[in-house]
Length: 115
Image (cartoon, rainbow, N blue to C red):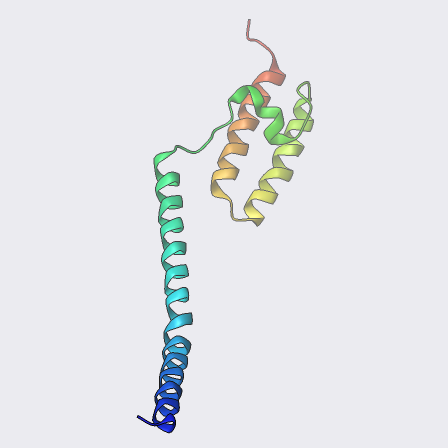
């Protein structure tokens, strides 16, 4: 075998390695990244499906409405309108329901205990 034959073989091996690594290298990384992202998404969905949504106790109604705990009925009603408008603008149906429940609890607290 001559020196020319050895150089041709080494050149072909180098070119073959370059072609295979350029075609296969980035593709496998993209596929692995896609699989990892899909796995994370599925885990997040399973975690969200198994844990119930967090609901604030009604004793925290003033935090939901962003008013002081000793707010008047007028303050509660104006906060209700403002917060509902924000929730509806954001298309947050669950938030709007939480705001309504907080307003009911707040109005009951502002009314005071029934004799």
